[in-house]
Length: 353
Image (cartoon, rainbow, N blue to C red):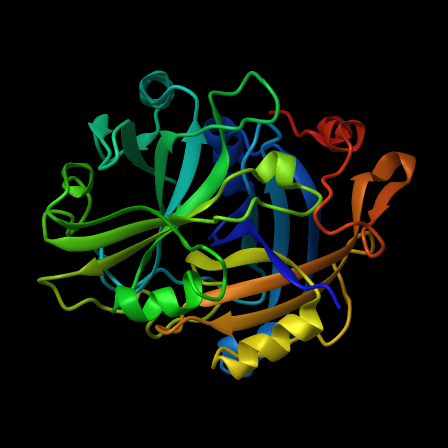
């Protein structure tokens, strides 16, 4: 059986108000194409919700200019909580969602003129290039940084996510999963010190080791042309004892709830992960119906710090639901991207404000 981890498919974002959040994501991040949107119980997540099945609205959104998707999760059976302490850089969990842009300085001006809550000026990245940080309506941090391999040229100032920053307790231990097993094995940089681009963030004036990773293998899967290159940046506090961002809270509360990876050959992949000490914590076992038009097989694993990594094997997704155009990927070459006419047809489902 062919098995492969294609790369990051989406970042899961727990929000307090889906409509408000999605409007912000459309305005500032260009995430205006919904792949699916539905309300349903989430029994798969019982292991992360104190064994009580929650109900949530989940909306997968995409910026067709390029980048990964975001799964916006808004619980409907309870009021989602924020952390009861101010989280700081280096705390354990997914801390920042990274968004790619063609021109960071121009993007900064757009955010400033349109009233986004900015957390920094335009500053320099460790590997060169410019970046800045902002906050969404949920208090979640987004970083705008230079990107490449854009799929289409649209009107919006940014593309979508191309990675995330994850606070870990021990980078070397985390690399056993992220680099050796998940395939994020190419080091863009590995630096230790005080970083100018971090200094405006809560706790960012301290010392950190940070390592930015990407895949040495090319991204695969049907959406590879859109997602393109993706990154995982691990950050370890040197002179600070980090807290767990999710301590005392459950999946679906406000925050970056998981990183979703696109995979093929889930069964064999699961056997490999189990043999290496990262077995599935929950598994749909078969296909999961996401609103009637999307069929996927979902599993989760925990990283060494208990941070959630979702694995998704997609079987069927809507391309243009109104016309009955769907993609069945079970018999496709797992490395072959979708044809351009299919990908670009997604623009017909664009949400406009």
